[in-house]
Length: 250
Length: 250
DNA sequence: TCATGGTTTTGATCTACATCAATGTGTCAG
DNA sequence: CTGACACATTGATGTAGATCAAAACCATGA
Image 1 (cartoon, rainbow over the protein chains, first blue to last red):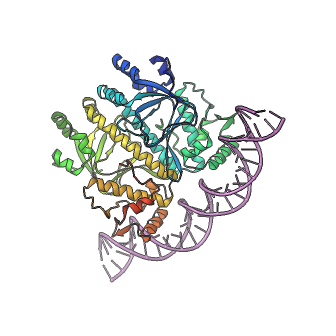
Image 2: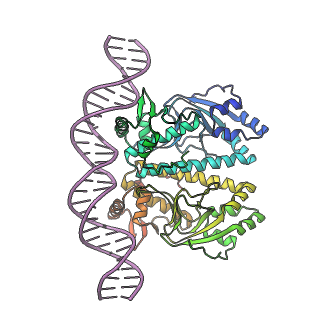
Image 3: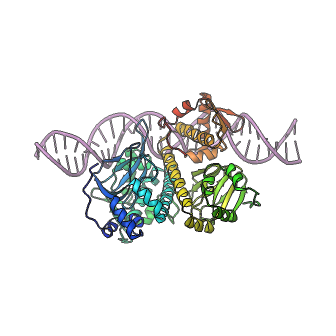
C-alpha cells in the first residue's frame, strides 16, 4: 500500500515502460486530453506478496501495470483460492462503473502500477470515445483469454496445464520484449509454486511434480531460481493439448 | 442455418421479447440510427442441436438471442469439450473487429437470434458512442461471469458445481421474467446432462449422480422432463460454496 | 558458523471423479 | 402395441490428483 512519490516520467518514457496497452490508452489522446491524464494519474508501488486491494474493498482508481506482475484472485469462505487474472506490464485493472473491487488484487512480484482516479477517468472516457473503444478491445481480449483459461481448468490434465502456463508466459514475455531469439526461449517465471497452483486449479505439490517431470524429460530447463529455458518451443506446445496454431492468446 | 423471413416486429415488440440487453443496445438510439438498425438486422432460427457457426468459420454478423439458449464451446483435437459461454435471451454474441468465430456456437434449445451484419454494425458503433459504451458494460459483465465460472471449474466439487449451475440458471430465469414468486422457484432447466457436463467440466455420469443426490436430499424437485422446483433457494445456495450474498452474477 | 523461516521437492496413502458397462425411461413412427 | 432411438440412471472398477508428512534447499541475518 506504499504510495510512492510520483516518478518524473514523461509520457514517452512511460510508454517505453509499458509498450502495448498503456500506450494504446494514452498515446492517441489529443494534447489537451493528454494533459488532463497527466494531472489525474499517479504511481504506486508494492512489494512481492503485498495486497493491492481486497475483494469487496473500495477501489476508487483504475490502473495499468508498469513493471512486475499482479494477480486477481477469488477466495471461498473455506480458503480455497482460484486466480482469475494475471496482469503483466501494460495490462489494465479495475472496472469503470464499479465502486468496489470484485477480486483480491495482489502483487506477485515487486510491482509498479500507474493509477488514474476513477471519477476523472470516467469523465474523460465520455469525452474521448477512443479510450472507451480501446478499453472495449482490451476487455474482449481478456474475455477470450478467460475462455481459453476455462478450457484449461475444465478439461486439461495437470501436465497439460503446466505446459500451457509456461507457454502462455513465454509467449507474452516474448511479445513484450522484442528479443525473439528464435530457437530457444529464455525467460523469467516469476510465480511461486503456490501462485502457479492457484492459476491452474491444482495443489502446489502436483505443480512441483509436473514441473519436475517436464524437466526430467528435457522439455524445459530450469536455470537458477526462476529462470526457465525452453529448448524447443514446439515440442512443449505439443504437451499443452492445444491445436498447433496457438491462435489468439494475448 | 435456416434463414427465416424477417418477422414483422416493431421495435417495441422486439424489446418485449428480449427485455434487457437487446433493448439496451437499441432503445436509446436516436430515431435515424434506429431506422438504420432496422435496415441491417434480420432474424435466424435454429433447431435444438443445430450449430450456428463452427470455431474458425467466417462469422460476418453479431447477434443477440431473442428466444432459446445458445452455447459457446471450445473443442480439443481429441474431442474434449468445454463450454465457455451460455447465452440466454437478450445476451449478445459475436465480436466486433474479428472475422471468424473463436468458438462453436450451438443451439442448446430451439433458438431465434436477431442478427446485424457486422460491417454496418461497426460503422454505426463509430457514429453512435453509446452503443460502444453499452457493449463495454456487457463485455465487462461477461468477463465477471467468466471469472466466477473459472472459480467453479478450478476449485469446486462436483456437488458444488451442480448446485451452482442450478442457482445461476434459476437467478437468470427469475431476472428475465418478473415473476419472482418468492419462497419456491420453478423453472425450466433446458440443458441435457451432456450440456451440463460441458458447462461444469465433469462427465455426464457424474452430473446425473449428483443431480440424483440433490433430489434425494430434497434440495431440488424435478417435475416431468426438465422442469425444476427449488423449494428453498437459500438451502441450495448453501451447497454452492459461494458466500451467501451472491454478488454480481449476471 | 549456525539457526531461522520460507519455498520446493519427494514419498506414501487416500479419494473424488472418470471410465466402462448395463439397464431404465420416455417419445415418436408405424 | 412395439420397436427404435435418444437420453438418463445406476453399478463396478480404475486412476489422476489430493492430502498428509517429511526432508531438502536456500536465503538472510546474528
